[in-house]
Amino acid sequence: MSGKTVRLKIRWPNFETITHQMTLDQPSNHDSVIFSTALALLEKEWVNGKGIRLIGVGVCKLESDHYQLPLFDQDFQKESSLLKAVDDLQERFGSNVIYKGHKKDK
Image 1: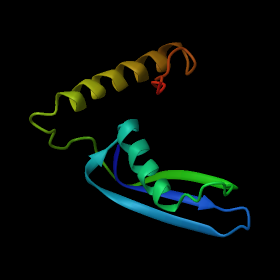
Image 2: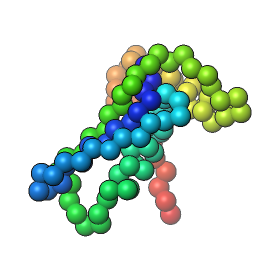
Image 3: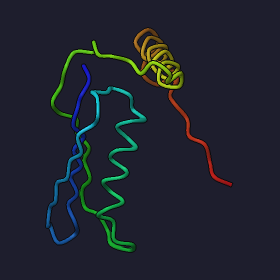
């Protein structure tokens, strides 16, 4: 399944809770798309030095994975293949066998 809307929920230390969402151009199940969208929503609300009691990310408006791929977006197709391979390995050998890393900024 792929989702068209990414939702971010933040609860501040005083228990004030806010929810924001962003609708994508096309449904996605790519973790990088969901993460970058949630991060963009968080950056709009973030107050430097202010603590967060709870943070949550959700995806809604789910659809089947059958949708038009971008014609010239090779990275999208490569990431789809990578995510499928990671899912297959985790299903076969367990969730801790492999996971996606992150680059560190220098």
